[in-house]
Length: 109
Image (cartoon, rainbow, N blue to C red; front, side, top):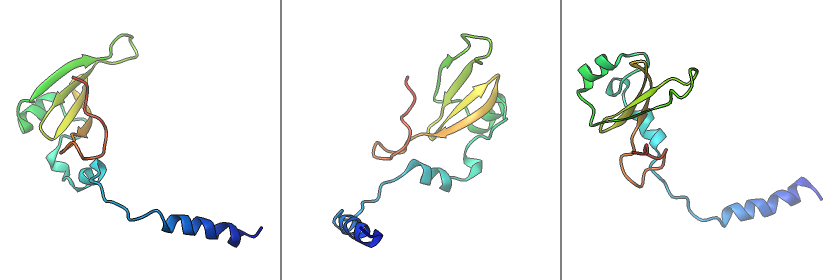
């Protein structure tokens, strides 16, 4: 059977799939967010608090059970969550804007 004969049913199947619906993706919003709107890796906890104010919530620290597992602290702000190791920012994750937004699940509280 030729490749063309195999491709025709696939093309027909794709045509029957119907219209595509657009979803709001968290990654798209993250790409649109200016870098100044969130802390950057390496900032100290004091710098973050001075610039963005006190967090809405300081979550329980995680890790530290073994020497090679550092303790991670998490601060929740309205638009993002900041992850610290030894008072330095190691990551910043945007929070979902709405329940319909597709992206990572919010942290367990």
